Length: 109
Image (cartoon, rainbow, N blue to C red; front, side, top):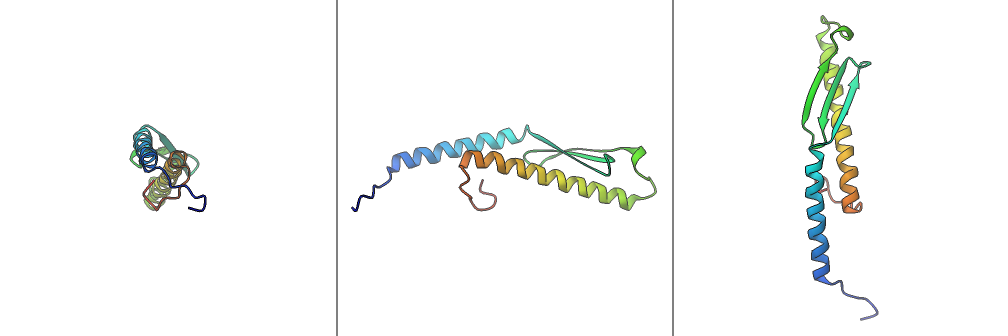
């Protein structure tokens, strides 16, 4: 056998089941996590959950020109994109803590 030991399949399965349970727990916890992105000096704020559900958008009327709809639309898009990036980073960090940074393919925390 050359000194190589076979992994105990029962232990491997137990570890896989524990990791799966931990991943499910983290996914549930992410629903309660919040990130906030703000653009335009606070003119537009977006709050998103850790599971990428947009919770709110707030617009400070005194900070935007009501006649410049295109700029307001751009700020909303920028705030949503930044909130999504932050939420994805949060999810990646939490899942990496569970998986030990296994580097599973995209979407497979």
